[in-house]
Image (cartoon, rainbow, N blue to C red; front, side):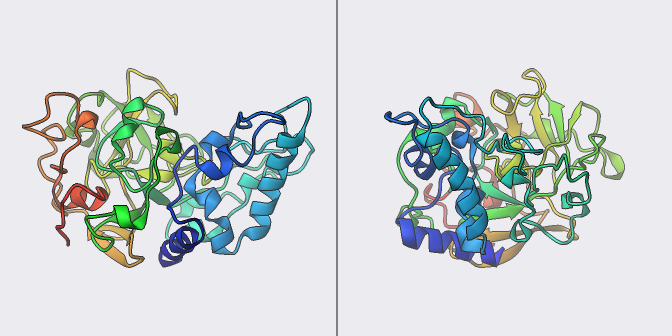
Amino acid sequence: MKQLGLAVHNFESSNKRLPNQMNDEFWIRGFCQSGTKNRIDVVDTYSVFTLLLPYVEQTALMDVITGYCQQAANANPYTWYNIPLSWAGGKMDDGKDNPFTTIVEAYLCPSDGNNQTHNINPDNKYSGCCNYGCNRGDFMIGSTWGENKNKRGVFFDGSIGGRMTLSAITDGTSNTTLFAEINCSDNSGDDVFYKTTVVSAAIHGQPSAACMAMRGENGMVNGGTTWAIKGRRWADARAAYTNYHAALPPNSPSCYGENYGQNENSTCMCVSASSNHSGGVNVCMVDGSVRFVSETVDCGDIANILGYPNNGGEGHHWKGPSTLGVWGAMATPKQKETVSL
């Protein structure tokens, strides 16, 4: 995690900004269809972790990815078929491995056995895993919903405009999280454990307690349909793969909206930080320090909607200070909360 914190600082030093989680300008403006200002396909979904590759000793891998993207940008007529897909393993159109099937050790926690995907059929590799979630704030929301304009986390969708800089984190870089640990799902598809899977629940417009209710006995979910996608793609910026929401304390369940179905774009999600470490998770702060946060950390009253009693809309409409205790305050970079552990 300290390596990831240093990588973000080195990226910021080079670019005078932090990377975006989805629609980063490096991909959107840097690779346009020949003779146009229209981005090439797929790159809108690329995560923060694609941008950090050169800063975690993976420049060669970054060169492979950008090489494919530049090839597509130069093609006339344009075709997207050989652009690396953030959501697919297997082979590229040219018969080579999708670069996103590469196992990047810097993105894995040794304590998580579910993150090992290299012992599979070499002709049909899976996407590489990621045990670290980008801070997307203290609310539950869908990856591409317009309300992401709230920008409550450090990392946000670049399509909504603006840049996140270190100077914009007015709550203090030592009080605000960059990353928190997330467990990866069991790739078998039969994952029913609440720290690793994502379970269906009626969470849209509800307090985060609606997701906490899916925590069952013996580490398993309390009903619902499970979706084994958490942490399974380091290149994919969409909610369950490389994000966490401070709507629930560490080692709580993760949920998707049962009325939306299993669609990474349209469904609302609550992705909780989680780990196999006893009693909590490690987090990386914006200043690069690493701390252990207990699963008993103050998270306010999860039975109330975010912003209660002053929020007249849904939780993700709230624009004021976090009402989710210390844990929520750590996830919001500029809401005038300076509480610390």
